[in-house]
Image (cartoon, rainbow, N blue to C red):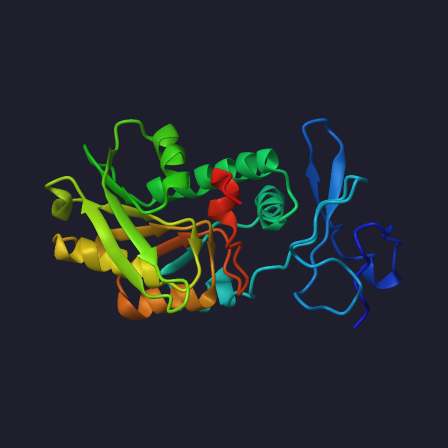
Length: 259
């Protein structure tokens, strides 16, 4: 396999590429096009890792591509897992978020845009009714939801995971009294192990909510996390932008400025 060029090298034309589409390009606010190139994690090509920063010449950071999907673009995990359609804008937002050297201003701006895309598609999954309940576990996504739907009712669940055992414990839960009669958007930005979400769904079930009416909104998901949730609750729906073994677990610290 030919090594992928680093982000500070020019891409020269190759005979075998003449019939292939050009690299994905993203346009900045100034109108300057930037090439976005992606490398597999651990690829021994001398290129930066997915967490490397953008270079000063305007070329976007390298990011690992999502896992391959099945026939008809169906994710291999199952029909419960839904991916936002991939495009250049979505990939650029993911790249900036994954890059640990991105400035906090660029990170928050890109995260807010990605949150809104996921929330809008989540709302698109709901039926048209007079009132809808949304129960977020991800504070970062709440504003994106309110930007899309101001009159929506919100419940909260506070869950903390042990860093060593990864076991999740519920500390607080408060919902509208009629939540059992409504569709629920469960919001959790980074789906890694799935343990926290599983506990959140258990709390909702205890309050009369059926898993079949829960739509989990996530920005990034690992295959392990998605599979764990679906195995526990086969009727749940998961909506995310990417399924990949490496999730940007620094999201919360970077978004709230606690890193």
